[in-house]
Image 1: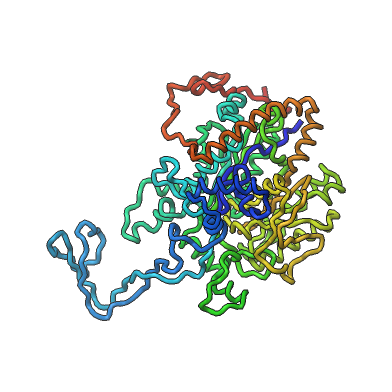
Image 2: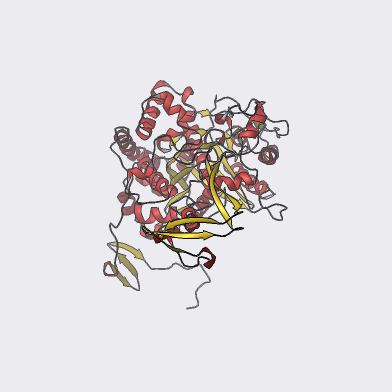
Length: 607
């Protein structure tokens, strides 16, 4: 019997707050929550942001003006080329003198540790300065929250700091000590697939390495390795879980999170793993990164936002409404996020009394085929969406498929996406007899976090199941005329809706990277596990889960009081060759056993 992957925990951080206990989602629908729920999320934000003020929490979350901790959009560094018309004499510190200077500069001692240079007429120079950036809005982590201050971050790039926080947040959301999980699962039964789509491009990663010498700075020994795109998973393996299990995450542009989820689902379904840690981390609110997307015309610029709203050139654009999925729009809004989820196989989830957040029957990935533009959409997303819905139809039946689900759209806020994705969703809905398919577009609140974006979509879906609230696309006044609407339901206001059975998480990425994940709701998951394992197993799960839930709430209480820090183990528990025992039957690594027995498929043996 194939094992069913069950999502048992979700943690992370984005512009709406932290993901555990669904707080980031609850920030999005705050005004529609009961007072007691609002208070819990306010306390969680206060612990992160250092302020109890509701107005400051609201102003310092979701899409907003880019803050100085990232860069000043009114004064982005920009060097301009110029040519000297006369000779120029300049000085520099002798310690900065380097090999390879042109002999025409005639360097000579100027005293006081300085060197004088002659710059000849007609020389090209770079004149440092600043300029107004075209884009002022981004989805940033809550104001005042610095993940690097919560542990010994040692010049880690921002996305890696966020990764440590997200993985620790997921462990807190699980409510089961990781040592208890390891006691049930051998090292080879754990997989970790976490990555970023672009790598770490800020000053402490590849960005600092690439521009260091050009800016007269020293390149450090950390910038190169810490910039690798798979480094978020490496950090979790080495410093959070100290895992010896399977690794090798995927990179698939804006579909990266779902690519990693597919690897985990395949591992658990096949029995190669019983536990999988899945995620993506992206910190692209960096001037140089955003410059690249702005050059493509992909970002919502201040000028274009003014034009949409009929404002004069000097007016302040409505940055809160910069991202407008499926409405009249002008581009997407860059955001940062790190999202990590934990999957168990169904038997382990029941045995440990784990939370049952969702079942993940399958994730489908397809390329676009022949393309005119590498950044343009293609046919692949038709395949992934149709296969995901077909799987859910086979599991649930037509009646439940047509009435009990929701699609979390990629919904970037670009004119091209609103047409192409809505056509795909509409045609799939009509093909499968779905008449009013609710369409979610969480990027309208949080922005587009590139490789982590579908993680934002997934954690929003968990919040919808918990609260019964579907966030409206409140940044638009109407659905654009060229959007396909047949079979679809675009809510412009937050509504109560019991999405009882399933969700499809859809993602489209540059280069033809398409992915769609089929998820079962908590209630449908419980129903399915009852059929697979029997009511007695469910009864035993409920008994164990009571203790797990009590642990979750205890940890949450400590966090609200500020008595929590991320799990981070540097140079702790390092194994040496002396700790490893090996023979033909298996290995023992610091007391943990890996069995080398092989169960070959029929017909594979020559002996």
